[in-house]
Length: 154
Length: 209
Image 1 (cartoon, rainbow over the protein chains, first blue to last red):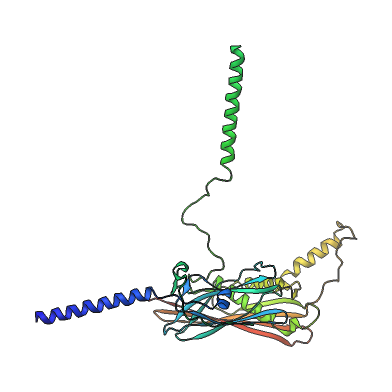
Image 2: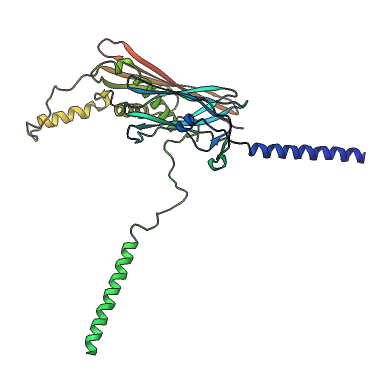
């Protein structure tokens, strides 16, 4: 009985250690590295580990910049995301600030953020993203190689 | 000699006192600490607001932005050579809560005006002020004829903007779900044809758990 209880206890300890190790590994999981084209357009407030920016398409129609940006939730759980576009004119000046918009991404869902520039003066843009539940501070994410996602298509 | 020295010393002391006081007066200006009381702090006016699930600032901002961007893509507004003239009619509030729909249309008007692609004619809400100003310039006898704006020169709008906001509310013991639908239509005044229409849907759910 004593031997059995010792064995049960050691199993629990081992399982606990494995869980701690797994948690530790998850915490140390290298943050995703974006392709240079995506990175130049996407600004994350803390690097997102679960929600990923995908392909970005940009086209000018009727003198207005149209943008379609893909966001992917590769996890099986719902993820929340806040985003906004920042529009820049030819001289690099930021046009009016947009409001942050909330977005719910279901598990395994890919969604497209589609928008059009507020004025013909907009020549470029940045996509600001913030996923409060799965972000890590930027300084922890430096120089961590990982598979790049998507590309900017013009 | 001693009296002269005392006089010089007195002047030096007076000058020093004035300098110190002046220095104090200057330092209490820009570097004075801010007045702080209680837990007041400034927040981000553009942040996602989820304090309650009643209609909030984020809903207003999202609706205005979504409608503006959609309207800017309408060929009715961008195809012609002349910037079209729009007037804002009423946006009906069909929800069970108080919503300042004028704040939504004001935001839409501001954003569309800033785009530089459309112009807005004075709407029914501002018409009283507009006619009073014209009447004052022309009938009060106070203004020079050369600078007073003439009667009968106002431009009629090409389009009118009309809309509504409605909601569906579902509530259980644990969950409070609100669905908002904001609809907006742009109608050509002369022909009565609806040239553009769009909707923005918002769902907000509060869970007690």
